[in-house]
Image: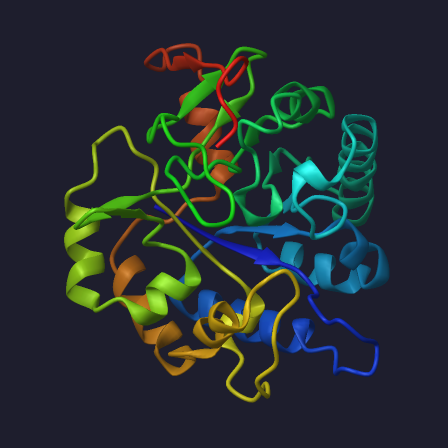
Length: 279
């Protein structure tokens, strides 16, 4: 199990209050009190504007990874721009943090059949692993047919796919922030118990998942209904998250990735999206 958080500033105007640091500090305190170490994927432009945020996360003992240079889907960038920007973002995070930056996570899990160039570019930028694939159909971005357990892209990049479970006809990323807040705890815990032994479980959330004081607004790149769901159940976030990670050995994703790539590790399956129909 690993705790991860996607650290992004999704304000649409500088007139709106900057609340990322406030909420990240809340999360860091909560993790410290429980002795949990995790991974924070940080947007490059946010790290550039607030390097003290990166240092606070590192000083608390956590791994930092890149959440792309801007919080936009991979397909909205040309391949040239995407490769250049993630390399720039990795170098910036390494300069600020003083530690290797091994992990990349695409905004919105947007590594899909429409972005077949992305795995090789992520590897070429120096990353050890990616956690950018939702192996299911999704209204936003998904890659149906992708393995639900860790695998290697043809370029050798390790992918740690988003954990999913079946609920009726739906396959959902049940450890994401909105699902943690809104799903009954019994469903979440049952889904965890049913996971394949080879699966790597990681929660993912956002600073705003923990923000009880933020006034409702429609978030960028989401519809009105989705924005409502982003605000529902925030008072349940810490209790629900605590039940999930209670008594579990939480590690950073880099620690997990290193074990999977160790010389004596069980060989991983290979996967390619070249030639797949766009989903």
